[in-house]
Image (cartoon, rainbow, N blue to C red; front, side, top):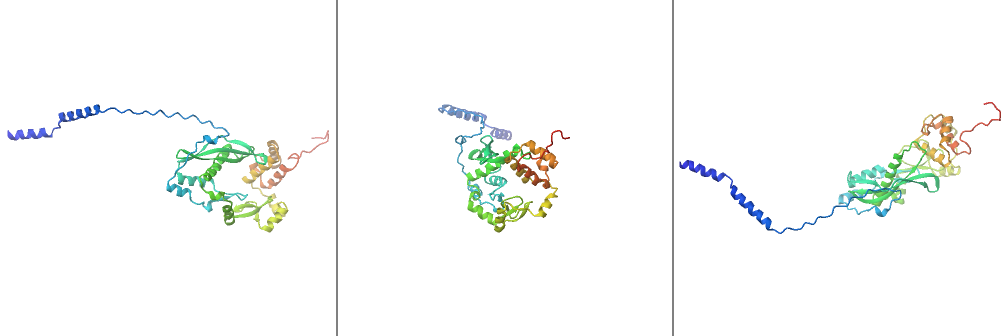
Length: 334
């Protein structure tokens, strides 16, 4: 009997004290009820952002640019010197960094997806300075980093309305790339490229001036790049002076014979040059299309053969119609 009573007592000790827990909970509720309630300030809801309507002329004061604070690691990356091996040069001698290198640079400094170029205005066309026959497309962009607008710049790109090889999307992409280089300057990134003495030193080390056909002055290219398709040799001082005196000089008879048999299509650079000359000469689309069909046997400038190119350019610049029309006496048979 004693053994059975001992088992019952042990079992009772192992069971939870439900009544004690309820009493403890009641005391806690009573204490909380006695505490004076504290007023909670409810902040007003943030106003909804008004839709942004882009115009052709942004008001810079409305862009809301903000200061940018970077980590020490990001500062070190963005302060890195330009990689001279990736610098490019235009035929005019202007040095520049390709926009893809700026994109990689920003990705390393700010983080992939942590920055973007946002249009602050619609693209617009303006006449090129000193040449009303040329048009420039311009558009202002704002650089956002970690959601904050930190810099703005306006990109520009020459626009050829009659150039079938240049799409509207190409122009917008070029505007973005040009503005990207300029916002980098605003943030002090790659400033060497805007330093004239640095550019001249880079030219002396990495570039060379050469002569190309049908040019009255030499052009620049990098030493590591292959020669231009129409390159005739380096621009030494004696030759440069002689070529400039002769306004480009005459090509050799052998070169003229080679050109007369060249069945290759003209390059993109030649297409652009063709349209630039056509605009300056104020030639119409109908004139050009008629010439291409009758003389060159093609529909588009990109299909012109090199053996026809010089004559086509000459036809653009001469006075009168591009295609000579034979005049007949009244009553002559057709």
